[in-house]
Image 1 (cartoon, each protein chain N blue to C red):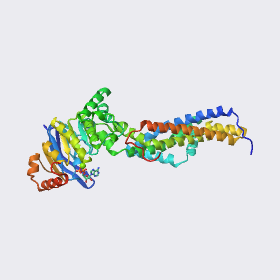
Image 2: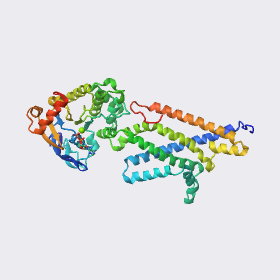
Image 3: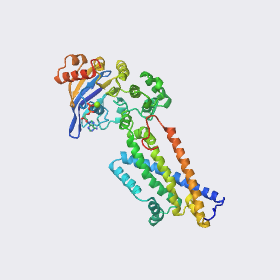
Image 4: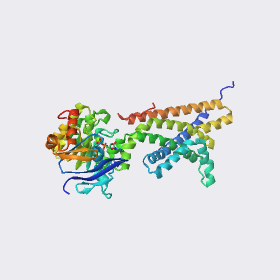
Amino acid sequence: MNALLVVEDVHKRYGKEEVLKGVSFQVEKGETKVIIGPSGTGKSTLLRCINRLTEPDRGRVWLDGVEVTSPKTNINRIRAQIGFVFQDFNLFTHLTALDNVRLGPMRVKGMKKDEATRLAQEELARVGLADKADAYPAELSGGQQQRVSIARALAMNPKLILFDEPTSALDPELIGEVLQVMIKLAQEGMTMVVVTHEMGFARSVADEIIFMEKGVIVEQGPPAQLFSSPKHPRTAEFLRKITELYGGEG
Amino acid sequence: MTTFYFEWWFLPKLAQGLVLTVEITAACIAFGFVLGVLLALGRVYGPKLISIPCSIYIHFFRGTPLLTQLFIVYFGLPNWGIHLSAFTSGILALGLNTAAYQAEYFRGAIQAVKGGQMLAARSLGMSRIQAIRYVILPQAFRIVIPSWSNELILMLKYSSIVFSISLLDLMGMGKRIAARYFNYFEVFIVVALFYLVLVFLLSQSLRWLERRVRVPGLGAPGLR
Ligand SMILES: Nc1ncnc2c1ncn2[C@@H]1O[C@H](COP(=O)(O)OP(=O)(O)O)[C@@H](O)[C@H]1O
Ligand SMILES: [Mg+2]
């Protein structure tokens, strides 16, 4: 098992609806995978199955050679190694930016307070928010909140970060600052799986794009190939629609 | 109309009763707080085996008169060989009762915390208990303060029913003095004023607490 993340034949059903119908893919260390596809297709469900925020019905997931889906695995220890960035940020409302970022290191990793504080300040600086350490989430713009939530994920020193439409809840003028942080992370070699509709980001940053529809992967490949000559008509149609909706370079 | 009959030495006596009122109220609130939080957590997060008994408890104590509950504890339990002092019985009955009400307020507040908060906490690798302790409860407590404050003020006033098991709280002491000197009007006006002052002090402290722990974006919905 060489890849950092291996997802194998993951199935998930909600009631009668089969949301994931056997999804498999791998992510190498340092790679950025972008997942695209219409809404309701199971992209969020897939990301949540990776760290078992949602329990898959069937299929297996490995992180760095450890089977995430094994009942013997301590899932909290796995989750501590997988960052998760949510569409609506989910910063802890009652905590300042600094406390949001250092809570995980302190409570999950048992880091000493002053060490965690230093780390949190570094991570906030890394996302350009060193001066907002004492602000509460409600006092921050959406873009700033999302950057704090990225800092919160980074502070755990994760092997992998999962992004679930990190810019979809943002006003258009705030999208850029979040994408910039993500681009920097990709360049620094962070391993990332990103669900997004930002085609500009996908085109320039992704090592590979996965097009999902109705619970299956329809097609995957490097952005140049997928954008210029998609093999599957559904992919071509989706790309045409999304370009109309979000504009060429996103 | 008769003359107003009140002697100054009644005041230290009533103050003595006031101290007992404060003690009983504080004890039953603290007891009710701990039990109330546990009941609320049991109801929200517990498996059926726990959440159903919690619900039954809450419905029983909210669905029957406080005075009945007090009499069961003080006059009823001795039939089962359990003899508690009037003081303990008062605190226990009031505490068991307010626990049920506090539990319902806490439950509402826990459920008012946005679902994404738990997800985010778990995604960092926190256990469920850690997530509840560090993320859910600190928010729920802030949300609950207004309705919780009302409950505390009610309990301060309801604590007066312990006079019926012959405790000399503010109410009991007033009744004893008034019965001897036959000046019910005068004594109970003073007793009422004492309660008024207590309620004022309590509600001011709770407001102070609310301001003290207030966080932008975590406004308590509804009252006040
Ligand atoms: N917790 C849930 N309970 C029931 N149905 C759900 C739940 N989460 C997602 N679904 C359903 O699963 C389908 C896929 O959802 P989702 O993974 O959020 O898709 P996407 O992220 O691609 O928009 C949708 O039809 C959605 O209604
Ligand atoms: Mg989604």
